Length: 440
Image (cartoon, rainbow, N blue to C red):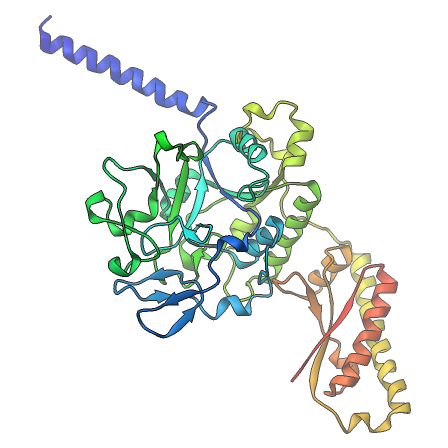
């Protein structure tokens, strides 16, 4: 056998060996097909209060979402102020998770630590970890007092997140870590010098690493997705919004701490599925919502005595919750329809009784609207949905009007009648109903 033939045989054997290794990768405990976005408590002490553009002399602005090629900051101004889930102060992780689901996108940011951005370059980013679930559990337990990790997250399929544009981070440089000022580079809060070899639009992937000085975060196996300026129309990764955003996601898994929180998230998924749009009027991806699963760490701890080998792929289907499906029989539908009619008559009588004592109330006052609403997802609420008598809204409420019974535009009268109807329905269905109103 010639040397050439021997080399071919060796290459063939190595190729077969490599194929075996690649097949076994799916069985390795340190590998996973899922990448997780941590959701942790909001820590306002880390975030600069305002961004100051001292060069322009125009004063202060909200934190920018990205910087353009001229170094100008850009922020999505309007939508945060229209959001009924707007966060104030140091909000807990569960509240932030609820806001993310309601918005339908993961807000990108600069990952500030002690008011210093840890994202380099002109684009804000969303961070993920490729740690398997068992490693994530250990990491959460080890750093639970830090405030930067917690028992909440959203898991995405690795290949789908890659297709959406996310990439593994770059830990360290071959040469020296050298930064330049943001005003000199016109590209963001922090930037690397050209001599480092990392292009401006890839700098979001860079994580400062110095092993001798114990600056090592490589065990997090981090991925990042950078905001492509304003091409998406939202300030983040629109993973739960409709096909208009060309999302590659077929399934996500939401991780929460307790079983009760898992139930709450399932109800929120049901609510946004029925509402169809978020608070900004952006349509949800209904297929993705239907396929979304919710898992609690409490459930895993109760059913897996040894979680040290667990991966997301190993969680049995029966431990994953989804949108609750409530079936309502014909008898219940008829009962709810009758009681809503009675509530309308109660509202009408309440106004008539009020007008007896205040006969001029029909002629003077402000115009407005009033409605009955509930936050509870029950068989009664499902019946109202099935009967097309109630409208779901992404703020978590189910709302309907009884105007046809009250025949007035005066807000004082509408509030009297609607409150009486809400009280009646609360007593009949043993479910809390409220009155809401606004001026015309």
